[in-house]
Length: 213
Image (spheres, rainbow, N blue to C red):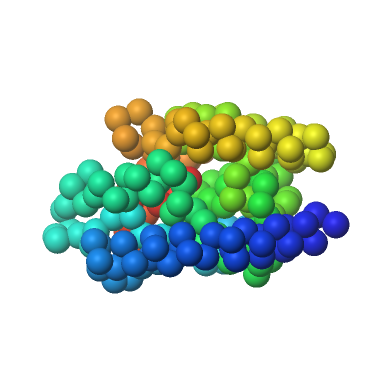
């Protein structure tokens, strides 16, 4: 039933949002150039990897040492604030890679450092929005996010999903938690006390910073 709802809702939203998607794609093509889409490998259900689809929000780097802040653009900031860069992930929902609601899909190199408890996060399809997303998003640490996601997995129900959708709408109206302190998203802590690259840095390695949320 959940999968049927995902497909039906994603299909309807894609059709309704098609004019907006075309407009956004056109703006990115004119302002930032090609490619319009940002593609990145993520870990999904049971750790299976898939390619997530988002709108690109940063211009290509002029040199290797250029930071994400230098590559950022007013258009990209507006797209992220309105979460319009996330809309192409409806394609991932239709493909079966993702659900509308669930833990955000993370980078495989982060999943490699999950402990046994944290791997429970991979027990359901990742989502476009989720319990952790509406309770802090990138402003909270990865361990906090994972605990929120584990709570959702253990307690998910129609009532909880409706609450997530309602809080998602509120967050779209009043955006918060898009980036961590200082504009840098926290990296996933490794068991030995280090951390994986920050979300912004990891995304920059594949061509579009601030893409991991």
